[in-house]
Image 1 (cartoon, each protein chain N blue to C red):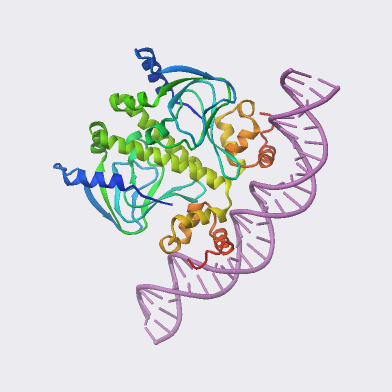
Image 2: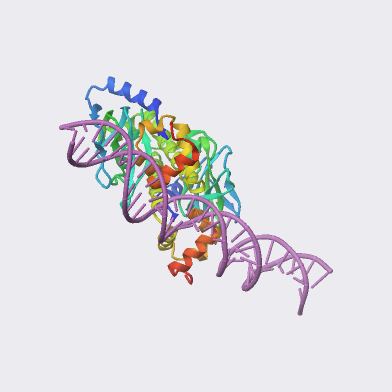
Amino acid sequence: MIRINEKFLDYITKLEASDPSKEIIKVEAAVGTPLIKQKTNVLFVYIIKKGLTKCYLTEDTGNDFIQEFFGKGEVFGELEVITGEFSFCTIEALTTVECYRIPKKAFLKLIKEDFVFNSLVMNLMATKIRYTALRHSYNQSHIIEDRLKGLHQNIPDLFARITKNDIANYLGVTIRSLNRAIKTSGLERS
Amino acid sequence: MIRINEKFLDYITKLEASDPSKEIIKVEAAVGTPLIKQKTNVLFVYIIKKGLTKCYLTEDTGNDFIQEFFGKGEVFGELEVITGEFSFCTIEALTTVECYRIPKKAFLKLIKEDFVFNSLVMNLMATKIRYTALRHSYNQSHIIEDRLKGLHQNIPDLFARITKNDIANYLGVTIRSLNRAIKTSGLERS
DNA sequence: CGCGTAATTGAAAAGTATCAACACTGGTGG
DNA sequence: CCACCAGTGTTGATACTTTTCAATTACGCG
């Protein structure tokens, strides 16, 4: 599932336009660039303006597990900035990505002083929890084929946008199993 | 893993003590009582004072998947109250449970007017996301035996406190597989 | 004692991973 | 222009993990 958050993007766009101190700036990242790295200190919060990223964890086994794909308006880095802990995941650009970047201090100030902003962040986090919980549950109680079908319904041009490797890492399976599931589900030429 | 949040409990305890309008009240639930039901409107936020609950989703397949066990200080219902959506999980008492109960309106008012409270809620949600994400990733990339060992490390008296059925639903496996894992991991008499 | 719920176990079937070989594609440099 | 290479994708055979199904035992309680 590619998550988006138009509402938040709208608000940030307005903020950026009326920001005299230029705390919110636009940055661009090329394909493959890690915007946040696992187990590092997070100094900025990012909001995607355009493009696609993956959010993944590298396990001690060496496996990557993709949590979610972030699209337009999605926010990352906010958890780490709020709790002050190191990042538990890596955010990497899958396409060229344009985003807004807010320094930690400015983000925390906005949370404190702008209640609308505060509410948007609360909502965004609540939605992340719901989404993550539902997906975990779904993954545990459905076989690969069902999970693949579900993903494909949400992203019709799935195979054009995301590599097989990333799809497999998102579903938490090997590429071999993914390929078999594609066959048996009849999703080959999509 | 049984999650706890002493800091939040402390704050609520203080709030309750100095609450003239008696919006925060203490309630008690017997074993098996559902405090929040999946797919229903949520009117209260709860904070556990004493006891243990399970937070689980019932899938369309009929399987229950336990998200987490909540202990002292853990909060639930806050997500639904913030987003206004129906609950996506059920919260059920595993022991006799004492908790504080705050009406939706009062909770939202606290968020708006008490910044310390607001920060505590933000932190609590950020922590939930981190925890949920890490667990999902861990579950996808480790076999049952490892997952069981990890759980047992966190809850040494696991088998005394939680039924086999619930442990299996927490790990997302069948009881049969759980029993085999207990054997092969040498955790039988714990 | 008798009942219902929880726990245990074996055998077979289904699902998934591992391993290894091979095909396709778009550069890159001789 | 071709050979080579790296990255990506495909496929079969086999081994391993987990579920399903069914039978059986253990335990608490009226």
